[in-house]
Length: 304
Image (cartoon, rainbow, N blue to C red; front, top):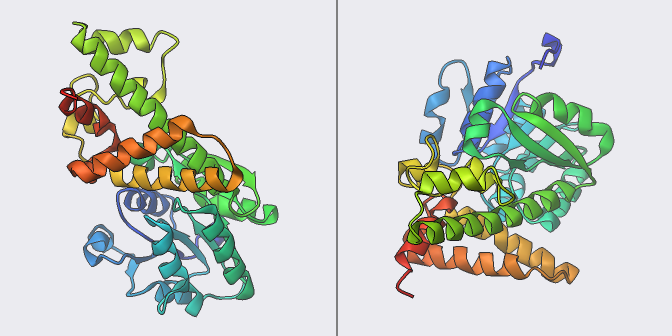
């Protein structure tokens, strides 16, 4: 991100959770002063040195004309943008609003219309890569919105990611992310089932993972984010499935995929099964654990 200091005017950042926190820190590393807000004030405790923490999304919009939001759900995004103290209460004309949340594409399109009425621009730019990539600045951003605004969005997003891809109009970034996460869930469940079967057949899990990763079954869930404790270091399975991407959020994303599949009359048989599995996991106490805990869930369900 080699840029002139003229572009280093304050940037608003709303949503400082597992993903938003390291993303914001990478913007700071690249010289951007931040105007910060999170509904949970303790989430801002890492940003006291030189960064402005304000009390509402509207206050962010009053102080910055480029704002990034990173929120858990469609309802959170609607509240932050259109709520009583939302961004649209004080947004400046010409502002660039970048929503990196994973939400319903239809909600992104509605928000974009509301933003346009205020003379500003909204682009959806959901991310892939997880917390590790967020910390390393290696995220992939899937961007939807007016193509003429893509360069301005990319200036900021390239400080947080190694891949910034223009997908088309508003909502296409969300569409790409939903498709990616449906495949991610399917392959994670498949990896967990495969590893569990191999272990029950007497294979050493590290050896089995090694074989998979040099064979045609290799995938991201097997070679980068293996769900079996003890196979890899630095992943949630090595830390009792803490951190990472929560099971509840995966269930939410799969729900979005199901809604999109219904509206487009697309058959998603494995996507539907994956959605049911992650919903069941949420009901059985896995909601706050990383989604790779599906391996632990399968082990506990073996009696079935």
